[in-house]
Image (cartoon, rainbow, N blue to C red; front, side, top):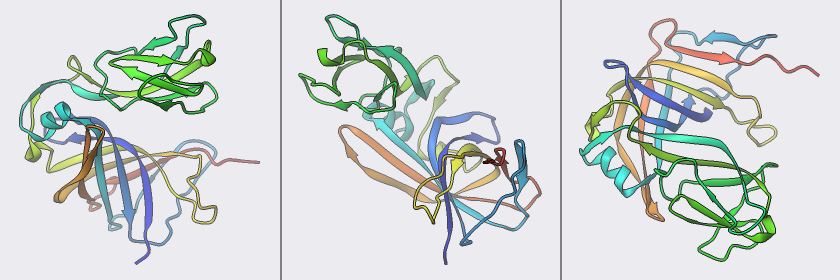
Length: 248
Protein backbone atom coordinates (compact mmCIF):
# COMPACT_ATOMS: atom_id res chain seq x y z
CA UNK A 1 0.00 0.00 0.00
CA UNK A 2 1.38 3.49 -0.81
CA UNK A 3 2.52 5.52 2.17
CA UNK A 4 3.18 9.08 3.23
CA UNK A 5 6.68 9.36 4.78
CA UNK A 6 7.74 12.27 6.99
CA UNK A 7 11.27 12.65 8.35
CA UNK A 8 12.82 14.95 10.93
CA UNK A 9 14.46 15.28 14.32
CA UNK A 10 13.03 15.19 17.80
CA UNK A 11 13.26 13.77 21.28
CA UNK A 12 11.44 11.03 23.14
CA UNK A 13 10.13 11.63 26.64
CA UNK A 14 9.46 8.85 29.13
CA UNK A 15 5.83 9.41 30.13
CA UNK A 16 6.38 7.91 33.59
CA UNK A 17 9.36 10.07 34.61
CA UNK A 18 9.17 13.06 32.26
CA UNK A 19 12.85 12.59 31.34
CA UNK A 20 14.18 13.05 27.81
CA UNK A 21 16.01 9.93 26.66
CA UNK A 22 19.21 10.29 24.64
CA UNK A 23 18.87 13.88 23.45
CA UNK A 24 17.83 14.83 19.90
CA UNK A 25 17.47 11.90 17.50
CA UNK A 26 16.40 11.40 13.90
CA UNK A 27 13.01 9.85 13.32
CA UNK A 28 10.61 8.88 10.55
CA UNK A 29 6.80 8.65 10.46
CA UNK A 30 4.83 6.56 7.99
CA UNK A 31 1.09 6.85 7.41
CA UNK A 32 -0.68 4.20 5.34
CA UNK A 33 -2.18 6.69 2.91
CA UNK A 34 -0.78 7.76 -0.43
CA UNK A 35 -1.28 11.43 0.42
CA UNK A 36 -2.14 13.35 3.53
CA UNK A 37 -3.23 16.99 3.35
CA UNK A 38 -3.07 19.41 6.27
CA UNK A 39 -4.88 22.74 6.46
CA UNK A 40 -2.80 25.93 6.58
CA UNK A 41 -3.73 29.49 7.48
CA UNK A 42 -2.20 32.92 7.78
CA UNK A 43 -0.52 32.09 11.10
CA UNK A 44 0.83 29.07 12.95
CA UNK A 45 -2.00 26.67 13.76
CA UNK A 46 -2.53 23.25 15.33
CA UNK A 47 -4.13 20.35 13.47
CA UNK A 48 -5.32 17.29 15.40
CA UNK A 49 -5.26 14.16 13.25
CA UNK A 50 -8.66 12.41 13.40
CA UNK A 51 -8.84 9.52 15.86
CA UNK A 52 -8.20 6.15 14.26
CA UNK A 53 -5.62 7.25 11.68
CA UNK A 54 -2.59 5.16 12.66
CA UNK A 55 1.10 6.01 12.27
CA UNK A 56 4.23 3.89 12.33
CA UNK A 57 7.72 5.24 12.92
CA UNK A 58 11.39 4.70 13.67
CA UNK A 59 13.81 6.52 15.96
CA UNK A 60 17.47 6.39 14.89
CA UNK A 61 20.34 6.85 17.34
CA UNK A 62 23.27 7.75 15.06
CA UNK A 63 26.91 8.87 15.24
CA UNK A 64 27.57 7.16 18.56
CA UNK A 65 31.19 6.52 19.46
CA UNK A 66 32.17 3.32 21.27
CA UNK A 67 32.01 4.89 24.73
CA UNK A 68 28.60 6.46 24.18
CA UNK A 69 27.25 3.34 22.50
CA UNK A 70 28.39 1.36 25.56
CA UNK A 71 26.54 3.77 27.82
CA UNK A 72 23.33 3.49 25.82
CA UNK A 73 23.41 -0.26 25.22
CA UNK A 74 25.74 -1.76 27.79
CA UNK A 75 23.94 -0.96 31.01
CA UNK A 76 26.78 1.23 32.32
CA UNK A 77 26.36 4.38 34.36
CA UNK A 78 26.02 7.76 32.69
CA UNK A 79 25.58 11.27 33.96
CA UNK A 80 24.34 13.65 31.32
CA UNK A 81 23.13 13.34 27.78
CA UNK A 82 24.33 13.44 24.21
CA UNK A 83 23.53 16.95 22.98
CA UNK A 84 23.57 18.45 19.49
CA UNK A 85 25.45 21.71 18.83
CA UNK A 86 24.23 23.60 15.77
CA UNK A 87 25.54 26.71 13.99
CA UNK A 88 28.41 27.42 16.38
CA UNK A 89 30.14 30.46 14.88
CA UNK A 90 33.91 30.63 14.45
CA UNK A 91 36.49 32.04 12.03
CA UNK A 92 39.79 30.79 10.65
CA UNK A 93 42.56 33.12 11.95
CA UNK A 94 44.16 35.54 9.50
CA UNK A 95 47.63 34.26 10.47
CA UNK A 96 49.26 31.06 11.66
CA UNK A 97 48.30 28.76 13.19
CA UNK A 98 45.14 28.36 11.12
CA UNK A 99 43.34 26.48 13.85
CA UNK A 100 39.90 26.71 15.45
CA UNK A 101 38.85 25.03 18.71
CA UNK A 102 35.33 23.68 19.10
CA UNK A 103 33.38 25.44 21.82
CA UNK A 104 33.14 22.17 23.80
CA UNK A 105 35.95 19.68 24.35
CA UNK A 106 33.58 16.75 25.04
CA UNK A 107 32.63 16.37 21.37
CA UNK A 108 31.76 12.97 19.92
CA UNK A 109 34.59 11.95 17.60
CA UNK A 110 33.72 12.13 13.91
CA UNK A 111 30.36 13.85 14.43
CA UNK A 112 31.41 17.34 13.34
CA UNK A 113 30.21 19.11 10.20
CA UNK A 114 31.97 22.28 9.02
CA UNK A 115 30.50 24.85 6.63
CA UNK A 116 31.36 28.40 5.65
CA UNK A 117 28.95 31.30 6.10
CA UNK A 118 27.44 30.61 2.67
CA UNK A 119 26.67 27.00 3.59
CA UNK A 120 29.47 25.34 1.58
CA UNK A 121 30.78 22.23 3.33
CA UNK A 122 34.46 21.66 4.20
CA UNK A 123 35.89 18.17 3.65
CA UNK A 124 37.65 16.39 6.52
CA UNK A 125 41.11 14.99 5.67
CA UNK A 126 43.73 13.21 7.73
CA UNK A 127 46.40 15.95 7.49
CA UNK A 128 47.76 18.80 5.33
CA UNK A 129 44.36 20.32 4.43
CA UNK A 130 44.03 22.24 1.17
CA UNK A 131 41.50 24.96 0.42
CA UNK A 132 38.01 23.80 1.45
CA UNK A 133 39.42 21.07 3.71
CA UNK A 134 40.24 20.66 7.38
CA UNK A 135 41.89 18.17 9.72
CA UNK A 136 40.82 17.55 13.31
CA UNK A 137 42.68 16.42 16.43
CA UNK A 138 40.52 16.22 19.53
CA UNK A 139 38.62 19.49 19.60
CA UNK A 140 41.03 21.46 17.37
CA UNK A 141 40.37 21.98 13.66
CA UNK A 142 43.26 22.86 11.32
CA UNK A 143 42.64 24.69 8.04
CA UNK A 144 44.63 25.73 4.99
CA UNK A 145 46.21 29.19 4.73
CA UNK A 146 44.01 29.62 1.65
CA UNK A 147 40.97 29.74 3.96
CA UNK A 148 42.42 32.34 6.35
CA UNK A 149 39.68 34.66 7.61
CA UNK A 150 36.83 32.38 6.51
CA UNK A 151 33.72 32.56 8.68
CA UNK A 152 32.56 29.13 9.82
CA UNK A 153 29.42 27.42 11.08
CA UNK A 154 30.15 24.30 13.13
CA UNK A 155 27.81 21.46 14.12
CA UNK A 156 28.65 18.40 16.22
CA UNK A 157 27.48 16.10 19.01
CA UNK A 158 28.78 16.33 22.56
CA UNK A 159 28.38 14.31 25.74
CA UNK A 160 27.66 16.85 28.47
CA UNK A 161 28.03 15.24 31.92
CA UNK A 162 26.38 18.24 33.60
CA UNK A 163 23.13 18.09 31.60
CA UNK A 164 20.21 16.09 32.86
CA UNK A 165 19.98 13.33 35.40
CA UNK A 166 22.25 10.43 36.23
CA UNK A 167 21.05 7.35 34.37
CA UNK A 168 21.93 3.67 34.28
CA UNK A 169 20.69 2.39 30.96
CA UNK A 170 20.54 -0.73 28.86
CA UNK A 171 18.48 -1.72 25.83
CA UNK A 172 15.39 -2.45 27.86
CA UNK A 173 15.64 0.88 29.70
CA UNK A 174 14.60 2.83 26.63
CA UNK A 175 10.96 3.58 27.48
CA UNK A 176 8.38 1.07 26.30
CA UNK A 177 5.91 3.95 26.20
CA UNK A 178 6.91 7.50 25.38
CA UNK A 179 5.82 10.80 23.91
CA UNK A 180 7.65 12.27 20.94
CA UNK A 181 8.23 15.93 20.15
CA UNK A 182 9.84 16.78 16.84
CA UNK A 183 10.23 18.89 13.72
CA UNK A 184 9.37 17.26 10.40
CA UNK A 185 9.37 17.81 6.69
CA UNK A 186 7.64 15.74 4.04
CA UNK A 187 8.76 14.81 0.55
CA UNK A 188 7.43 16.55 -2.54
CA UNK A 189 6.60 13.65 -4.87
CA UNK A 190 6.09 15.98 -7.85
CA UNK A 191 9.34 17.93 -7.46
CA UNK A 192 11.22 14.92 -6.10
CA UNK A 193 12.74 16.86 -3.21
CA UNK A 194 12.15 17.86 0.39
CA UNK A 195 10.29 21.18 0.64
CA UNK A 196 11.77 24.03 2.66
CA UNK A 197 8.75 24.36 4.96
CA UNK A 198 8.94 22.42 8.21
CA UNK A 199 6.32 21.71 10.83
CA UNK A 200 6.23 20.42 14.39
CA UNK A 201 4.56 17.27 15.66
CA UNK A 202 3.49 15.95 19.05
CA UNK A 203 2.80 12.23 19.49
CA UNK A 204 1.32 11.66 22.93
CA UNK A 205 1.27 7.85 23.08
CA UNK A 206 4.06 5.94 21.30
CA UNK A 207 4.74 2.24 21.94
CA UNK A 208 7.96 0.41 21.08
CA UNK A 209 7.60 -2.45 18.61
CA UNK A 210 10.06 -5.08 17.41
CA UNK A 211 13.71 -5.50 18.32
CA UNK A 212 16.68 -3.16 18.01
CA UNK A 213 18.34 -3.01 14.61
CA UNK A 214 22.04 -2.19 14.57
CA UNK A 215 23.83 -0.39 11.76
CA UNK A 216 27.30 -1.38 10.62
CA UNK A 217 29.92 0.73 12.47
CA UNK A 218 31.98 3.11 10.35
CA UNK A 219 34.97 5.22 11.42
CA UNK A 220 34.47 4.12 15.02
CA UNK A 221 30.83 5.25 15.08
CA UNK A 222 27.81 3.02 15.50
CA UNK A 223 24.05 3.40 15.16
CA UNK A 224 20.87 1.60 16.06
CA UNK A 225 17.17 2.11 15.40
CA UNK A 226 13.98 1.12 17.14
CA UNK A 227 10.49 1.04 15.69
CA UNK A 228 7.29 2.29 17.28
CA UNK A 229 3.62 2.84 16.64
CA UNK A 230 1.88 6.10 17.48
CA UNK A 231 -1.45 5.34 19.12
CA UNK A 232 -4.30 7.59 18.03
CA UNK A 233 -7.18 6.53 20.26
CA UNK A 234 -7.95 9.89 21.89
CA UNK A 235 -8.30 13.41 20.45
CA UNK A 236 -4.93 15.13 20.75
CA UNK A 237 -2.84 11.95 20.53
CA UNK A 238 -1.37 13.10 17.17
CA UNK A 239 -1.08 16.86 16.65
CA UNK A 240 0.77 18.76 13.92
CA UNK A 241 1.75 22.42 14.32
CA UNK A 242 1.71 24.05 10.90
CA UNK A 243 3.50 27.18 9.63
CA UNK A 244 1.64 30.02 7.89
CA UNK A 245 0.69 29.42 4.28
CA UNK A 246 3.20 30.91 1.88
CA UNK A 247 1.79 33.62 -0.35
CA UNK A 248 3.18 34.93 -3.63
